[in-house]
Length: 361
Image (tube, rainbow, N blue to C red):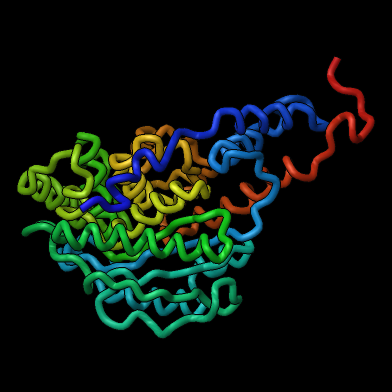
């Protein structure tokens, strides 16, 4: 049976060249030396290529955070116990997490999708954009994944269901008017999954793509690397099969991110990636839609060593370098005001002719 996922590659064409050229020409007519706004101009041109027209404002940005638990967390790969996933989702809904603060500061709505949290993850939150907390969406595929070190984390059907749920979550936000989608995640143990995914897809040694996540000590870090290496040897993954990689060593929230990234990109809505885990999801999604990187914006480069490798493979230059390693979409939220500023430069700054200012000789 043909599904939307079978059609996703042609649904995501390369960035719109004429729109990028038009945005570049317009920027050169504004009252400034050509190129003097540097990265802001690069962002404005990228936005035009994604939307197919010059973008003059971002009116309704939204941060979507996917949350799920990981069976591998029981193996001591995180500095925090597995129950923290559900506790943090409740914190998001209550409005007390870093992402709540940063989304509010950016003027962005915040939606948290429970796609696989074990246990209770809080009650229905207030409407998107409320100052008091995030809106919680229930889209639970399963109560977490199984331990990837002893068998597949998910069935292939569960991986596909997670991708579908992520797509539905983002399309719902787009239908409500979202014109910029920033993505984030929450899931104790998910840097282990992300490291396994990146190593499987790139062929880079596990030790080179694995970091300390929540801040594990040396013995835990060594255990984490050895566990991932053993899991990859057991699963014998094919990098040409991103769904198979996701099912074997991924997470439900990573599947949700894949679906959200693909859904927004196919709708020609800019996608702002957060850190290492969202980057791993984008790498999986690129295996399904080769033109996808043209439609992504990298918010920052985290201190996780695998993140730089992911950004290089995607051909993305990050906006910020702040030594972040929190997740939650925190870096993506921080980048939103810069992206909004780039769009408004195109929409509000006067041209030399309008301002009666002499242009360059």
